[in-house]
Length: 393
Image 1 (tube, rainbow, N blue to C red):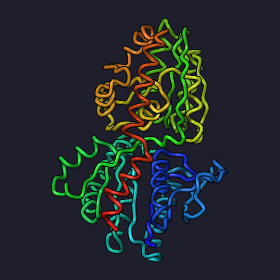
Image 2: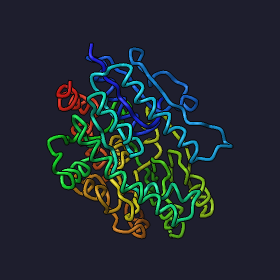
Image 3: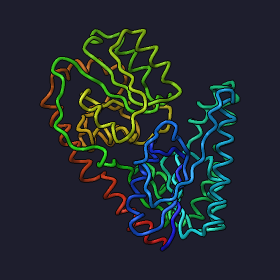
Image 4: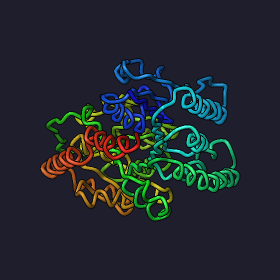
């Protein structure tokens, strides 16, 4: 039986969007191939076995959790060990194909070296832009130094990314915007590029009959509390509005900005519940407590379609987004919700939407149907087998 190694630089058991996507591919691939998985380890968070398949070999790298160790050194330690493990496994196990799914570019060095040892598929799930790194560096370095380092990363990334795509057998892109972008900026590699959408694992989002509130709007945020999400602005604009008592929030996720958001919710005396990180198989249960999913992104930050948008839709929820990048385009094209030009428009929109249960019901039903037709990961995994794996092995 031929062997495949799937690599995700995120965390197992499944606790991130990238890892969940990879797991969908594992389900399909293990029917035909011997499958190994390399990923980060967060078993101390989720001590349950149903994220793992008995017939799949897992290799995991755990980040240091010593609170005395500074975050940059924790990351550096993880980064080095992960890269070394990837090369070690490839040399040792003689895989027929390696599939590497990356949301960031710190692993490009190892990916480029993979080309010397095996065939690999490069799966890109982000724009790999240095702006995100600048924000991370600002946590412990002055702004101007953070900017300089991030720009150096950007220059080096452009060189490595070209090499990684050139050496790949196929490069898959998880978003239509990503596919269009790379087809435009790297047309010399168009024969290698293929669009394999992100999607939703509908096994974890069962279809239910949704009930909406009659006298208020219950907003749902699902994400990682990153600076690129306009959470601070959303809370401020609602907290200062005359409808603050008609709006409630449910927040699901973790992230470095979470405590700041909690303080803001308390400051404005808003109705907000923070549920922390919820296992992907349980997220759908939150749909009983909310009416609309919301995600607004900083227009200064490069962005793609957040996974949370399609997960809201899978739960039968309308969505609220701002008119930026793939967010506005996607919602406009699919008529899946409401689009704001500016955050300040949010209170007025919510005031108009209170009690619009029939409108929400239609949007929610249409959204669910769209996901079932176009973004069901079970179908995407089969497509991945046919368009990518079977062509490479």
